Image (cartoon, rainbow, N blue to C red; front, side, top):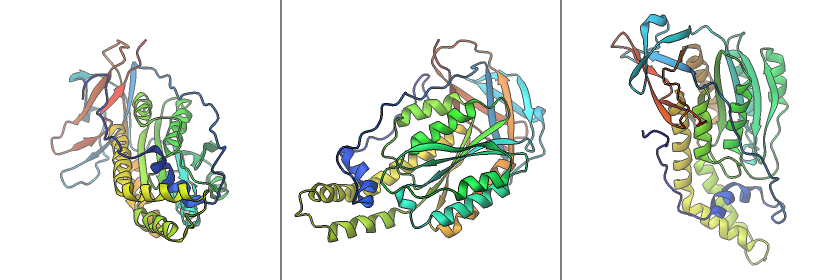
Length: 349
């Protein structure tokens, strides 16, 4: 990875209307004309660039989690320069976690299962872990501040309802979580988001979101609902039954056909983007095809969190030069493998 730049991602080869149509069409009828986004300030994040905090998961050659390590078992390198470990927290240390749930119209028939699984996930975490809740739909907003009171968390989750119009601000939801974690001093941090992976109305762009995550110290765990076939069927049914002779319907049908032609590519690229965000923060992506299995995927995330170490060091490179700095964490035991963030971004001053 070159300093100061991220690896480029594939460019989509369809009109902007196509991506928006994939979900907005499914919400028809709705107001088509006259909806405008309010002017929004860009997301930004201030960090102490000298202190670098890492979440690290360790497995052996068989893929079994290793949890009985101490600070002397790790070596940290920044741009191939050995760093001095200044802080070490074992796997028992508590997390501050932002739980982001998709309540866009695509979840209208499954929100009950989602809320039940999310509530069970809260119970899977350690009692000392503090949870905040946010939702994404046509908007993205935090609905519950950090608390270790599980009744309060569950009340927030069960109070969610499906938003009646199309749109999914996935990137904005992640950015809100990062901003919220910015106010947390020390400790371990994580973002767990449940979504079908589609993004079509955020104010923050993907590359900017990568920079934002690279400036923070949260590990990112996306759980992606694999509902491509369902969306394909909905689009096909809409095209077949809609009356395209009506002037107000014709452009929607056109966009539906365009969306259908690129649906496979859209899902592939959006999945790759979530995979990228997880990899770069030391997290992991999970997939669920049947929402009846969602609780099991949340349990896997909880298991990951229970097996995560926290490491911190003061960078020997004190220049604030607007570059990406590569990170490598090694276990002293050669049969152990460490997963952590691959780099972090230092804003230029």
